[in-house]
Image 1 (cartoon, rainbow, N blue to C red):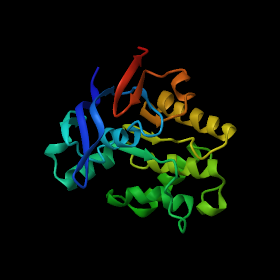
Image 2 (tube, rainbow, N blue to C red):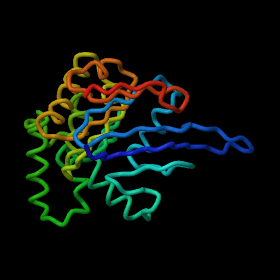
Image 3 (tube, rainbow, N blue to C red):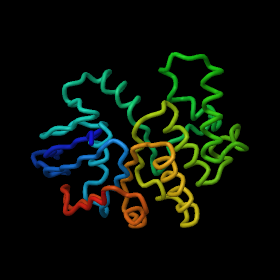
Image 4 (spheres, helix red, strand yellow):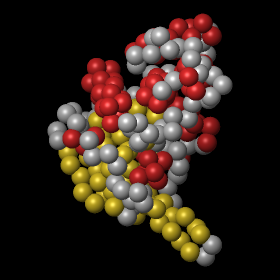
Length: 231
């Protein structure tokens, strides 16, 4: 099985004045193409920093991060941004939608670097919004949508460039339990029916118990405390 993300003995050390503060301490995570992986841990365990490494959003102080077999430290910033934009769709806990833009406009935003006609982008955005159950809410702005609907727009936006990987950071964190379950079902559907590699970074134990999970990584103090592979 081909590793699409390979994090090898990664350290991330921040300099706080004269003091070095390690956020990651020898992190090892391998995720194969098509996997459904969950990275879990309490506040302060290094989850956010681990997400930045897995998503190629930051460079390690020490160690190696490979995205689809390529060492991200060997890419210039422009190349890395392009590869990341093509390979990974991000879903954030706080949605990160542009409040003045409609759902369609938010979804087309990541397509800005794609060489295609505006009408093609709009039609693609409409198709994706229908896929996530927002066919009737396309022209609404974030302020006119519920929390669950905003997260669906965020998921739709993550699919804009048809990435191989969906990386979701606490995707149910700002939702009530019922809406959180609907978002979990939607993400699982994207993994199973649309063959996306799905990575969830969360403290929500429900994700680790979902049917179809391939890997669960538990973080503690910036390192993997334990891991479980189902397949």
